[in-house]
Amino acid sequence: MELGYILPSGPALTAYVRGQRACLRLRDGVLPSAADPDAIAERRAAVRLVLGGLGSLATSTPEPFPALLFFGALLAAHDAESPVVGEFRLQANARCTTATDPRDPVYAMAALVMRLFGDLEASERRMKALRATSDESMRTWLERVKAVT
Image (cartoon, rainbow, N blue to C red; front, side, top):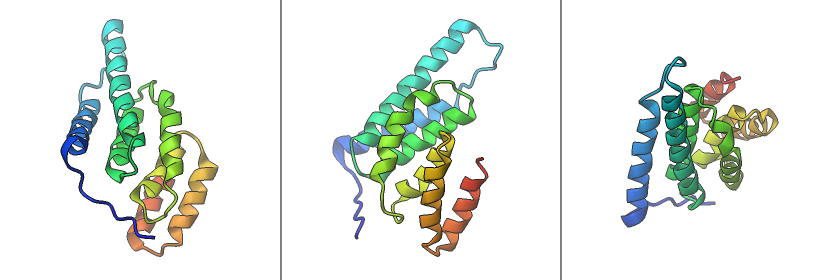
């Protein structure tokens, strides 16, 4: 099966660039736990808005880049200990389940996202399929994924 991804243009490319900018905003502005409650609520709303937009973008196309942006933003928000990450499990699962080819970068990233949400069995099944590809760079990736838990 040929994956056949092509470079997007027009509105799709604009949405991807906006998505990348949104991911960068997630990384910036992490508040200390002693911050003002209003600032914390405002930050949670901003993270929720970014993740919601990226989740919608990721589930609107089979292209890998929007899904990778969404997954990357989920991981960044998780690393920043944002409590809103769990609200996006259904969107993440929807995108993970559409990636069924181990050659698809979304399939490999889904192994990590599944671990993030505690679905270790599904993650292990994907990792087993990815190990079978006999790609050395994939083995390195799988070691990183395994280290998440």
